[in-house]
Length: 229
Ligand SMILES: Nc1ncnc2c1ncn2[C@@H]1O[C@H](COP(=O)(O)OP(=O)(O)OP(=O)(O)O)[C@@H](O)[C@H]1O
Image (tube, rainbow, N blue to C red; front, side, top):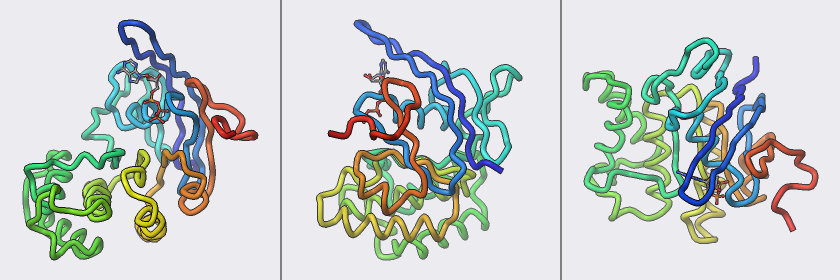
């Protein structure tokens, strides 16, 4: 069964222009990269899949389950979609410790704090090697540590789908190289279908099994890769 099926239409309006997205693709591999030039609509696609753009119309199915199907009147709210998202800047809550950031991931599901909840946070802290940072605030973490917390938080909800928006772009080059391999290992371990946005061909090679290309709000042929010189 296809991991992720997406047919989406939406228009974003700003005072001087509007951007029209109309995409139709299937990501059948466990890890798929979505690539395209700046402004082509990559982040918009991720936000619409996550349920963060209420104007989105069309269909989104993960493992056959509909998260959005406007013709059938289905539009699950973001917290019910069980989609884990890691944003470009990791978007950790600055006033919360590492542990509280992970707990917040679970609260998004509307779950009450209980023993299972605490166990899940403990497991993630162990899996992501965060024990010594449990009580630390994000501003006291390195870029790589923030990335680990953001990924652990996205996985706290046991997502059916993981969306990574330029997960390595906040890092400098040597760290980026090391964490690319760490991330590849983590994704291999967690086995959650993943759609990954990146500009970097090395990310595609290390992290993705398949590539989907977008240009100006439309899915296009990847040969040549849009935006490549
Ligand atoms: N809230 C908004 N209102 C109006 N237009 C928007 C809004 N958000 C994004 N856009 C426009 O939509 C287009 C797609 O933006 P998006 O962020 O999805 O591109 P992207 O491919 O992720 O770009 P980048 O690689 O630079 O992050 C851009 O032209 C952008 O200017």
